[in-house]
Length: 286
Image (cartoon, rainbow, N blue to C red; front, side, top):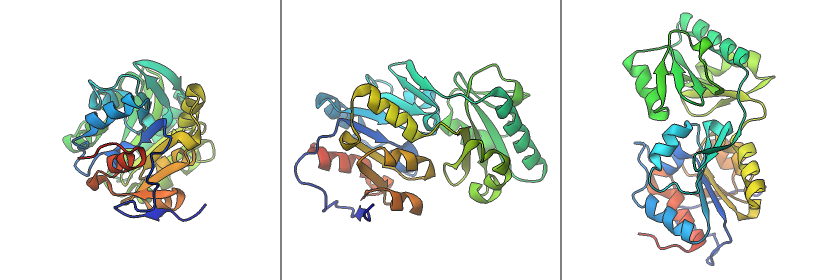
């Protein structure tokens, strides 16, 4: 693959509108700014895309309930790729899911408990379809959880929840690649263990990722990779970038993401997603 083009002004992109039918964007570090806020003109841009027959799809490690709340009121027809691709929902109807086996989820919970007992400041989130479940109840940990999981419950025993489990998410207050990922090596040969941000690690079935979910959406809607525009910033976005010819890493992205994408968009704090959409599809900007 050729090196990605990088410029805040996107000078190397075509001047004429591109035939895009599907726009897929990660949320944290990509569409949202560092304070977690969406761009001011997001609703207007989504409406203009819809008028052009272009589908807008959030793709995130966040749960479906959290994504639905963020886009409440202008989510008609949106395909939500939630929980890092383990659940796909459109207009409230689940299109696909890839749940973990309960025994695997329980093993992961016990692994995180041992990690905490050994002194690592860490907590586990069992990501069910109805709710996310946690055992830790301290305010500092729950503040991190509630940012991504609005449908959330504390439970005494997270190995015994009565729910289908999309994935296990693990948060650590120290860098996750150094403190959490090494403790999960027993799962790496059978499951997908991905450092999804500086402080989070997600564990899913080996068949689950954002790219697999996106390819399924493309097949069902008859949309090609050449008609797909994708934005991402972190390691859980890599497979999704591979599913689109118009793949953009944010300027603030992880180095591996910058190397994998075909192009570079301005950073998440510069409205990079919307500026790139407006340029490629010749939509009015500010």
